[in-house]
Length: 213
Ligand code: G6P
Ligand code: MG
Image 1 (cartoon, rainbow, N blue to C red):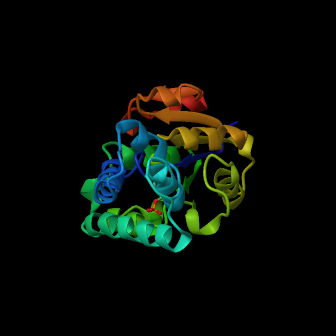
Image 2 (image 1 turned 90 degrees about the horizontal axis):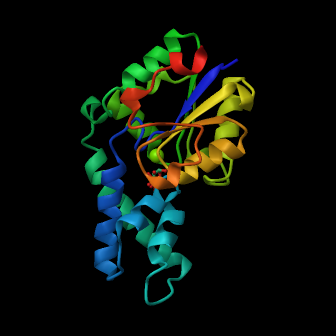
Image 3 (image 1 turned 120 degrees about the vertical axis):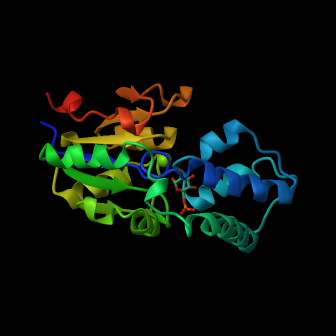
């Protein structure tokens, strides 16, 4: 039986996908590197330096480690300028209800986010208290699509992976959930999410009864 739901943050609960995307696009344009929608889609769920490496695939020169760190920091500055102003308005519609309904159904609720800004976002949006256990990028060694982050979330919740459902908007995230041995619900209409067990257009369509009965 299902005992826990583990949510991704960016693009599932928080309206940050476009904020990340715009910050990366700004950096790409400053570097003169082409950036298209597919580039942005591949970055979803991938940690900061991994995302930068995707951006730099089309750069016309190689960047040394210290330069890469500085570029990642620059992007984070653009991103932080926006999320510092966040409040509960930036919760995606239905996100708070989906979490509350999961808790009301007697299930545990976890968060598995590749972002180092996860705690800041949870505080700003006023939902830090709704999670039984939070795992962010600072607590793991291997980024999504590796299963480590979802396995760490299950362990923190005190449940087995097969008793968990993961909810993700990123291909790398769905891969991570499935590799952890959990059922995956994909959010959004990207063709890259086709391998999930179930699909919903957005978190407002998440109905916990659907997975518990
Ligand atoms: C999430 C987002 C990615 C982002 C990553 C790292 O997974 O989907 O787009 O690159 O977090 O976020 P951070 O806030 O640490 O730069
Ligand atoms: Mg996401």
